[in-house]
Amino acid sequence: MRYLLILAVVTAACAQYNSPIPAARPTVYTQGTQPKASASEYPTQGRLGGVDMGADYMVHSFGNGEQMYIAENFLIVEVAFFPPKGESVLVESSMFSLRVNGKKELLLPAAPTMAASVMRQPQWQSQRGVMGGIDMGGIGVGTGYPPPGSTGQGGPGQRLPAPPRAPDPGYPETSKKEVERAEDVLIRTALLDGPSKQPVSGFLYFPYKGKASGVKSVELLYHDAVLKVK
Image (cartoon, rainbow, N blue to C red; front, side, top):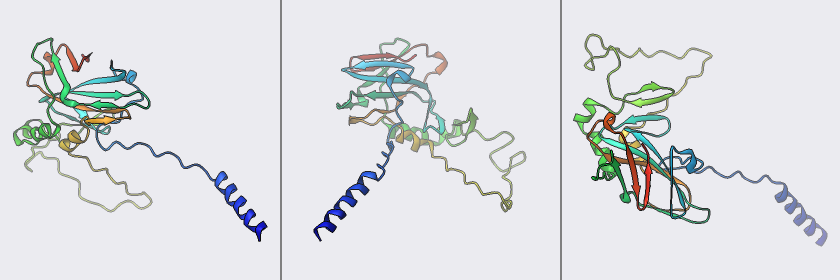
């Protein structure tokens, strides 16, 4: 009896030793954007208190990695923080500001909910829109303009959708991924405030009424750090 008990313990230990180690689950970012591998992969890099920072001046664009959108009422910068291993960084969006063309007056970031509400305004959507898409090297860019040949009213010249038809036999039916609303993407990809021990990144939305063509230089300020993003 004692021999059988020892044999059972040894067998269980061997089975546990030989069992494959479960693979680590990839980090899923429910808020913000997917950080790059390091700050050096961003067009602009900086350092603040031992924390590496990266920044990318996006002009008016933002997106979720699959679909890009345009928000012409804002200058948009993607910011990333890379804290040292075992340490954390406190992200404070309200401490950012933007200096355009060297002016003393600084732009402050808008709350994501406020920026999203601007995009939901009917007069903005009628001029620029948020839900349309055009192909830009494999990435859809939301524009909201009617497609070529369309009047938007169902009258002459409008390109009507093709009538439904049964799938051809032998070919699997493909499902199209639902496109997120621009205002939902805007809120979800905004920079997340708070402490973090992991790299974190996201967009900042600075209200701006001027034309992008008139922007010659852009500096991103955060506490004592100054990053020249353009």
